[in-house]
Length: 317
Ligand code: NDP
Image 1 (cartoon, rainbow, N blue to C red):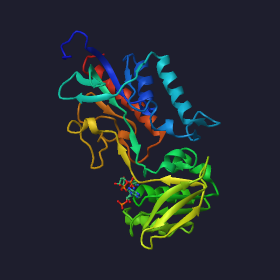
Image 2 (image 1 turned 45 degrees about the horizontal axis):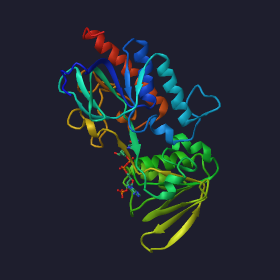
Image 3 (image 1 turned 180 degrees about the vertical axis):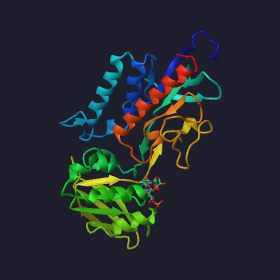
Image 4 (image 1 turned 90 degrees about the vertical axis):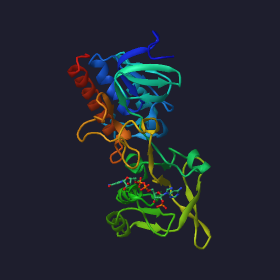
């Protein structure tokens, strides 16, 4: 199909993704009459669909299950006639406006504005037991789930700043935190290393590798390997936090937008503007620091307002 094909759609606002940033952008864009279309992507609902209870999102005084929360977000976006579609964006061309977005490798949409909310994915160790107990004691977010492990024993795996921050956060809630580092040293900044090594209830296990998360329905322990002595032992614990990095979902934007050294989209500080006028980024795809549903939703709102102002200034709305 060519871009001049009469069946090619031309819309004002295309939103890529379906997490809190995307749906919030849709709610604002729809209410500003931008008639947004959402392309949901491979994991409709995003990272919250692989978590269980969310207790820190304002407006849910009794907490809510992550998947249910995303259904609520979607319903609210649809209430204002957001066109929510299955499918994934296979490529984009931001070289000239309107921007060309290819869906499912065949359908072309021309969009005056594009709001990118493709998020980031936590990296996992790849253990079968880690996936099986994900959401039942295995987590990739201490800020989200740490509260469920108050006064319990937990472990964090990773040696970077995220792992150090997660361990430090958990040490204030939990009885004891093991920090499992695969090498003989950490990659984290000296300041963070200093903090974790001087926290009484954090025990750092260097040269150590998790082999299996134990437990039938919930986490009951962790089998670890000492890589120097080659000996295995079991830690008794109820929570296992994986903090070995995140991967922003930005492959299709490489070469078209400015990305930082870890692949996150660079936006103009205090806004959602990318280097391409009319292309905006919101949520975890441009935020490696806060990574919360509520901050993603906030930046989704900003992106819709930025898009509306851009369209008005360009005489397109
Ligand atoms: P990093 O890539 O910096 O660190 C990942 C860590 O996980 C490394 O220690 C790595 O080990 C370890 N790791 C990777 N794969 C495995 C595995 N299969 N098994 C065991 N361990 C594994 O990721 P972060 O998320 O920590 O940080 C990402 C970026 O964000 C960094 O630039 C960081 O500085 C920044 N950041 C900054 C913060 C701040 O300033 N407050 C807070 C959080 C992050 P190895 O070292 O052996 O490769």
